[in-house]
Amino acid sequence: MAAAPALFAQTNTAEVFGGYDYSKVDPETNLTRVNSSGWAVSAAAVPLKWFGVGIEVSAVFGNIPIPSGISAPDLHEKEYSYLVGPQFRFLNKQRVQSQVKMYVGGAFSKVSLDAQTSPGATAQLGSAGYNNFTQTKFAAMLAVPVDIGVTKLIAIRVEPAIYLTNFNESGQGNFRVTIGPVFRLGNGR
Image 1 (cartoon, rainbow, N blue to C red):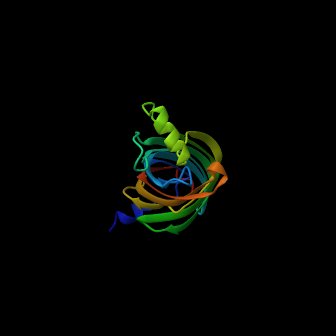
Image 2: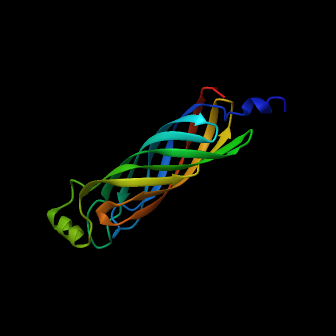
Image 3: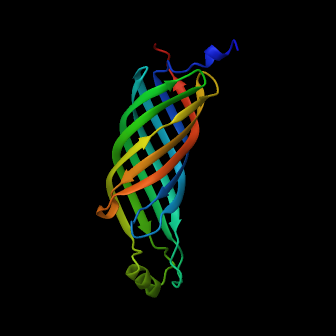
């Protein structure tokens, strides 16, 4: 019990995070949602105990299954995002901290047919709405990361989020969860 106060890590003035990212994305709204996985890294400055500003870059990759009756390999999907915005801490306990992040920025998405897809299968896929595309659009994220303190400087973060994009001029609301270590720096307060 004497070590418990030493775990209090919310006096940090900066944090760096990196981890695994799972997303259920919808790059083309006429297609099924895709299970994608990848990575996310972020950094934040925390000038006040309850307020910070952060930046995040992430990437996820997945395969879009082909509809039955068409003989072709799956489509490949990748999506990169770059976001920035404020974060507001609302839970500050010895072992558990949480905040709300409201980030905006951009997202790049690319869906591509496999190089081995025959011209006949390409035509069938196109008529079913499965096409190559590359777009960069506005993106936003609303996340509620929860940090479980391991030491004063290291915590494990679980971050569920709603990730919004606008590919093909139709809005997509995608679920996302990120998990990994967060490193806390500085002790200015």
